[in-house]
Length: 179
Image (cartoon, rainbow, N blue to C red):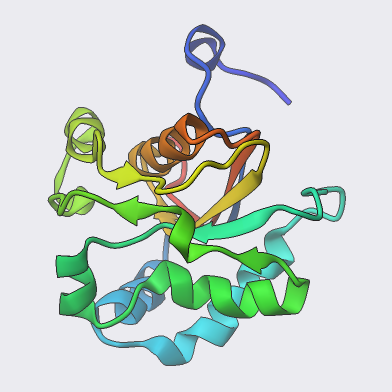
């Protein structure tokens, strides 16, 4: 594995990140339907794609917990569900991972990231999460639908690390391809 210069100077707060898909056609459309058009019928397919993306050599500790990235209460009310939690449920059940949505809370109703550039996304997410309990030595796997710049996942990981998490990895359905 190669590490870029930026990551050598300022290591990201994630130990690893696994992405199932490129955020490109046809997945962009399915993910948008899931999130914005109550497309929960896509959850079984998309969750199985997440599971298939997990490398065979990936070994999270038995006590690792799956932490879906939370939505703000306002966004949750608007959507009616958290797509990250919906994707995490079947994966946690099939893989027997501890599902722990209570480990991370959204403390700020942030602007939608899709409308912002990289720097604005980082500012937008600053302080957006809080871990309400100590995590001394726990291993956490954040789960989210899409990773673009990493601002959301990095801020969530920082919050879990401040609470004492020993490691924080991420599992995302789709990742914006590198230029």
